[in-house]
Length: 73
Image (cartoon, rainbow, N blue to C red):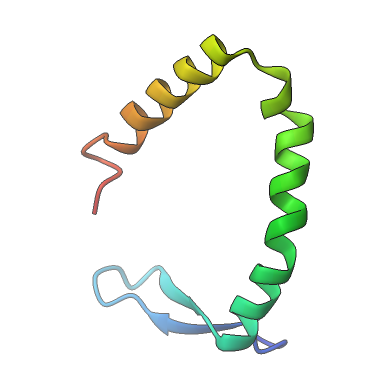
């Protein structure tokens, strides 16, 4: 992706083993082009098969996981 000009890479100042990646303007363009098709695929393959009650449980679980202290930075 870096060779295609989609991302830029820089050292992670807090962890020398890793790096920080940033999307370039071209990278955002590729992401935008893929997003509509990706969302439609996730909906057709996954979300459309869940009841409203199941979607509510999924939402609650996703929110709980996203709010775990270890995941928030």
